[in-house]
Image (spheres, one colour):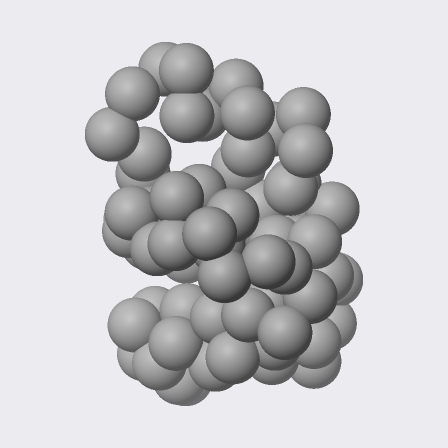
Length: 77
């Protein structure tokens, strides 16, 4: 099984060209992967505000990128 950090690094390379650099650096780069089990990829954010923004604006993008890397549908939360 692929390491969670490797999955996240590969997902970042998919996400990066889809966003403006400022948005990517502000909203995506501070995220850290926490755990990956049972087809659920859990991410940690610095604040609840950041978590709310990610859930409302970027959750589909994040889910699609991680799913593409893993090769099956993955739930990101």
